[in-house]
Image 1 (cartoon, rainbow, N blue to C red):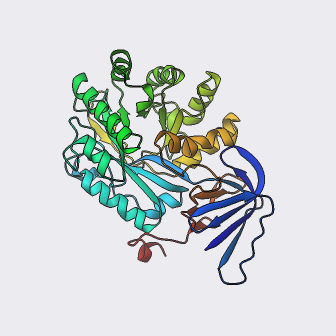
Image 2: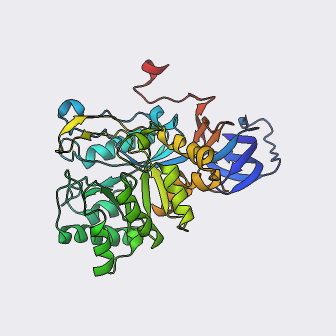
Image 3: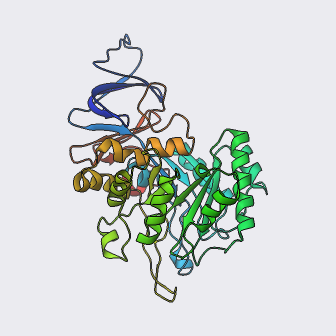
Length: 397
C-alpha cells in the first residue's frame, strides 16, 4: 500500500512548511516537495489532500488506564476499558497502559492482554508493570524479568507517592524497585522508566529528591505524573525540571476544569511557565490519565463523586497553548509526540521523518483532529472513524 499526503503544512514536530509525505506500507518513506511516484498500476496508491491542514506525528498518550481504573467509590465506580476509536478519534496512535489504585481485581497479565488486543486492532501499545503499590505485583515474579522478557513492558508504574491511596512504601522499598527497573532497562535496551503518581500529600517529590541525593541513579530515570494537580506541587516540579528532570502534565476533558477546582495548573499555563524558566523543551510530556477515574474526595478524604479521563483532552490542551498562550504549535506538540517517544525509548515514534513509523495526524484549520493514520493505515478520516474495534462495529456504525 502506498499513501501520499499532499501539500500539508508539516510539523515533524519542528515546522518545515508545506510538503508531501510518502508512506510505503507502515513506514514513512520520504518527506519532500512534490513527490512523484510511478507504480505502473500494480500497486494501490491512496492520495490524501492536506491543503490547509497541519500534519503532525501521531499522538503518544503515555499514561492511560486501558483496562479502566478507579474503584475508589466501590465496585460500581470501576471505569470501563478503553476502545480503539476512543483513542484514534483523539489522534492517539501509540498508547502506554498502566494500572492504578486497583492492582488486585485488575492485574498486569490482563493489562498485557488488553494491550495486545489494541495492537491487533491497529495501534501501537506498551505497558508498565505494577500498580500503585510496592512491592509490585509482576507477571514473572520479578521486576527485572518483566522488563527484560516481556516485549511490551518498558518500565514500572504507576507507583503512588504522597497520596492517601498509596501503599506508603519505605524509601528502601522504593529505591530497590527503582534500581531494578533501571538495570533491567539497560540490559534490555528499554527505558526502564519509573512512572510516579504524585498525590496531594505534603511530601510531594521528597522520595525523588532523596534518591538523587543519596544514590547514583540519574534524574532521567523518573517520569512523575500529575505534576499540575496543585500549585505547590507544580512549583517543586518546575525546579525539578530545571535540574534536568522529566515531568508529565495531566490533561482534562473540561477546558475550564483547572480554573474551577482547587487551583490546579492547566497545561497551557504550566508549559508557558516552563518555557519562561528555560526548562529544556525535551523534558515535558502531556498525558490524559485516560479511562482513569477522577475521584473527588472531601477534606476528610471521603469519596464524594467521580469523573473519567479521556484522550480527547490532549488536543484540547494543545489548542489552548496555541490560542490562549501564543505558544507555537511545534513547541506544544512535542509534549505528545517526540518527547514521550524519546523519554520512553519508543523506537521509530514521534517524528515525521524517513524510516519512522507511519503514525500521523492531520489537523484542520482549528487544530481539530481530521485524519489519523496508524502504522500506515487510515483509522480516522474527515473526523469519523473508518476502522473500529472488534466489539465496536455493531455499536458505532
